[in-house]
Amino acid sequence: MDLQRLQAQQRIKAGTPQPGDEDPSSTVNTLPQIATALVDAVWRLNGGAAQGIFRVSPDSDQKRGLIDALAQGDYSIRAFDAILPAAVLKTWLGELLEPVI
Image (tube, rainbow, N blue to C red; front, side, top):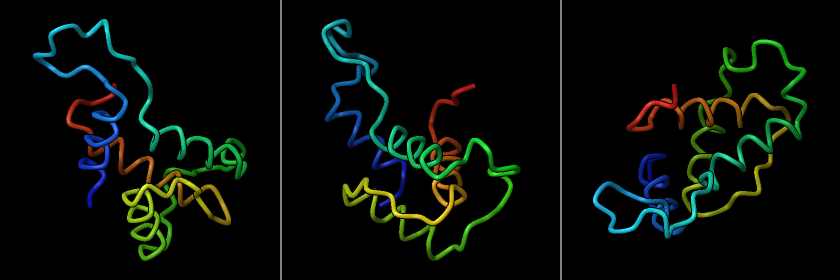
């Protein structure tokens, strides 16, 4: 499962409004769980103090493993440093249909 499909599933679960919704004010706007889990992991692993965190590439097998775990609903991110969750967060943000910025 790719990160786009995971985002769509979370959006449905969270009740985030979609184009064409009857009453978007009746739904709850929250950040997707994948975003909060990855950001929390980056901070927990001292990513705020890491230099070049989004330029360093993690092991591709570890990255694929984390993406697969997230797709299965396992948000307990186990990593030794902040590079892995930062890389997955960067990938997820890059795959959004609508850019954040």
